[in-house]
Length: 245
Image (cartoon, rainbow, N blue to C red; front, side, top):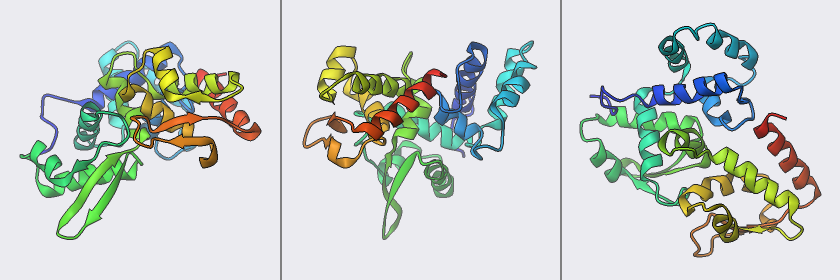
């Protein structure tokens, strides 16, 4: 029996997000839904975004037909999409949660071992999880990367998009002369630890280790950050990509 119950379809939820983006003119390549678009078109550069938007727009007289068209283009299986959504829902802090093999198997008792392994393998293939292996069982545990949260948080939480949040943090860095702290950002924007951590991880990829402070017992994946000249330029380009400028 597959992991995903037959009456659920996280792939359609993802497809609706992309469909809304087409209607709204939201940029996809480099934009706030870039991670989701990448699982629709994993071979980057192979599919032209403008042509894809045009193909979807041609189906606008039937919303369900358009959503079905997008759903069919999402490379993830329903099992992998369901597992990814489950991880997003169950994550407590958006970066350090570990899901052990026994926990995952217990959560999906009707799935065969092979179905579970393929779903985990798909998420690993898309850089959404890292897998720790061990002797005696298929894997020890899995941990989500920020890409998983980029893909699934927008359908799990209302009005939450880690990449847009990351652009907001990047803007704060660009306007600051002394860097930013995660706790201050969280308080300023009213973001929970669970919400801010994926965004911090995204921004952290632009910044060298010497200019970002690790958690050290705090709940944030990065406690504080400041940037040099080149990192400022990279962050400016990132902000412009997300906003479509």
